[in-house]
Amino acid sequence: MTTIKKVAQHAQVSTATVSHVINETRFVSEETKARVLKAMEELNYTPNPAAQSLRSQKTKTVGLLIPILEDETNNIFFMRVARGVEHVLKQNGYHIMLGNTNESLDYELEQIKYFTSRQVDGLIIAPSAGNHEYITEVSDDNCPVVFVDRKPDGVKGDFVLNNGFQGSYDAVKMLISKGHRKIGMLSGLLNLSPAQERLAGYRKALDDNGIPQDENLILIGESSFDSGYEMTRKLIEGSDVTALFIASNAISMGSIGYIQDKGIKVPEELAMIGFDNYNWAGVSNPPLSVINQSDYELGVKAAEVLLKKLQKPSNRFKEYRLPTQVVIRTSF
Image 1 (tube, rainbow, N blue to C red):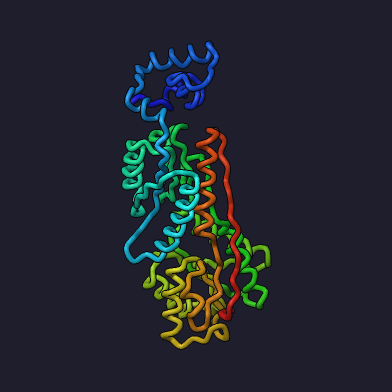
Image 2 (image 1 turned 45 degrees about the horizontal axis):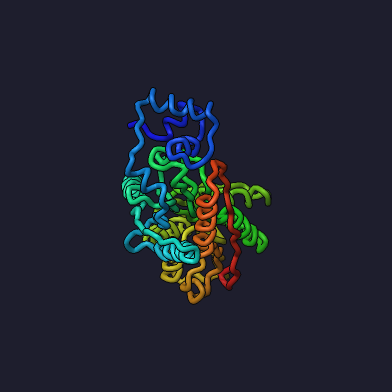
């Protein structure tokens, strides 16, 4: 199927220019207009009159896609992101249409197609794992996309992210400053950018402080209580680690479960720093030091970036990073 993007590529112009030619919404030089019309003719592209009519009138609705899974602690994180998005949109007279990707790329595509069929003005997406080149086929300059929390593969765009690399780097550096040299890391699967960045921060902190990297001290698994429990068991039974950096909230819960079952003293026998500042971390025994990352603020920023693009369309993209902080408690 011929799309407006294919016409733009054939005419060597932006999709916005093709849209302006079709809808006569902005001045386009006669030379450029002729090139666009010729491309439309050669590709046998016919604009959809109904879609044109609808698109010329903004719906004041934004689609938000987030991954919600059963028994997944990240649900709290993404619902706080959603609250931040909703707050900004409401202040600016927009409504939010919320969808769940179930961490499935296929379902994400299905949801995006549904949202665009409902003529949303823009999309905010916390992308699933996988290649997102398809985005260029299902969206255009009239429906801009902002990615939040995760940086997808295969697509350029506007990204609103936490600085997980810096947070991890700072946490590991603090453990090193306490004299630890055998620092284990427990991570979620590396199919999403936050996990990749946290591992990179861990490695960089070791390198900068002259500590050799030991791959046996890095365990990667599902972000779940059971996985955290089992990875902690393997690491403690198979090595002489004195500290743990845990890059997932769910894994931290499982790790603490194992440590409490075995009566390991924290921080005397094992120092710990986790990721995400949920309420339970402050009341664990002992209270867990964590990396605090933004959630509500992430949604606020993503909404602000999208509204700016709706007000002033642009093919230029930018990456926004929100700071993280280590919350020091008594676990290290």
